[in-house]
Image (cartoon, rainbow, N blue to C red):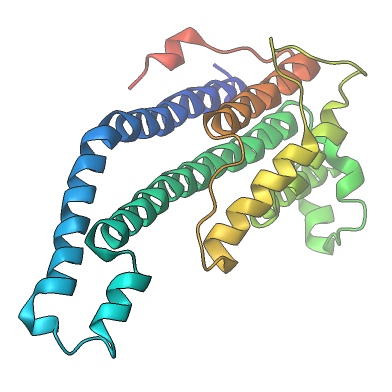
Length: 250
């Protein structure tokens, strides 16, 4: 099995297993939510009752009666606490799902770029035209070997670039024809990918609150199908195919 075929198959294999993890995580969270809701409400009501009625908290508020009224009493305050906690939990599930899914698709985009370079490094020549070449390289290697090494170094450097940068490079190299749509019920949407990429960046680096996914499970499905779309781009351009023997290899 050739190196690009092995990488192509391994990338597809990893995407399947990793997205299955994301789906399982979300499904198990969803299945456990009803019983967790009852528990959270019970604990929140218990806390609210202790807050308003336990003698040790008697001097906690400036005006106990006013605090009780403004916060909605035991039931109102307890319910609000429970709702906030459950809402934050679901947002955390979305955030964790997005961060994990983003890492999968980002890695896949880089791997598929590498597949393309391994198949034909000359397709990447335009991206390394201004790279410096040492006299030592010229003396010890052919021009083709130098280009290949520079291209592979460039591919390595893409690991530091954004997801969209990698994806744009993949499109520039594969150059799909207008209307290229190999997957059922899926259309590549760069703007949607950009928004999810920005949301992931906000969660990891900036956000003080954790937002929910705009479309929930459908956003995760979109990311998974986008990774499959990248695979289809490489398949269409270089006719690389999945090796089933490597798929079952441990």
